[in-house]
Image 1: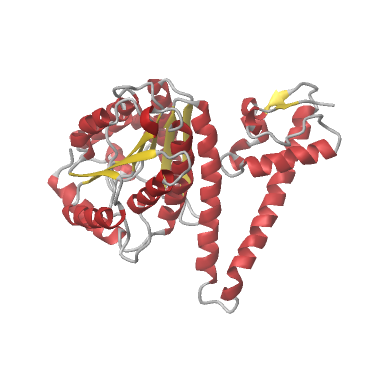
Image 2 (image 1 turned 180 degrees about the vertical axis):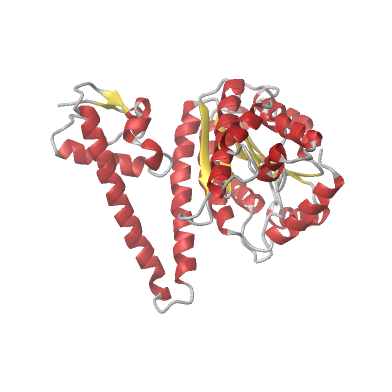
Length: 398
């Protein structure tokens, strides 16, 4: 799939990246850690033999050099936890990794931590192994994680995951789309574009539409960093929309991943599912993942400072402040919507209630507190007590 020079560059980047977990990796791994358990618990409750499957298509070494968990070690632990449940789930793990040295490290982690589990490790490109892996998970729930150092697989192959044998089983995919996108997109305004490389992005994006989306924001070589960021986001959102249309599902969810809250995204994650329950559960996991990401940064910021020992107390205080702020914002928006005099569900008013600022940031915890606040203010007759799915709860005016 990739040229020899791209493979060599990918090898060097892989060796550097896997020394320790970077800030941007904290969020995606936190999301996976939060989401894998509820996905397997829920979907595995009705699957044959309570089987569920995870495919990690660019698995890495399993653990970083400093011992921190990578996606492989996290999924191994999740599989053990699922097996130990009172109503056990049988999680089958399928890892694919192209870099030879990284594969060796991954196999070592699996040997040490995968006892008693069904685990496969495949050497090479995920595109080569994907058809056989999809046959192996025929008819059982599947979560596929695709996080390449280079370009993601073509959209046709992503769609094939949803159209696999037994495709009526729950199927979800989390994709890091944007690795090297800017480098290839730069060819659009180059004096010597490499058409084969541009066609490779056409395959990834499911057509050449992305070229026009990019050039609409970056029409020439002197585009600013803000222009490039806007172009990248336009391509990501266009990709998510087209993927949703092709899989015929409930939708997609895009998360921008930043090294710090005040910095531009370094990549975007695209989550795709055919079931609304998947979107709702992923939203909860995204919120919890962001909480872990903020905790990580609070600790990093405090290291080496005079008051570093109090970092966790300070982080908890900041989380409490954020919760109060978010609850107040949601309550105000609920009251505004209730002022129209008609009952509604939050899931039908996402822009009005969650907006661009809170979607994926808040979760049931915050929604419950906000609805209780509106109830106490006498603006609604809806009581969220004992209700789990608050996005689908009918919020009624008094």
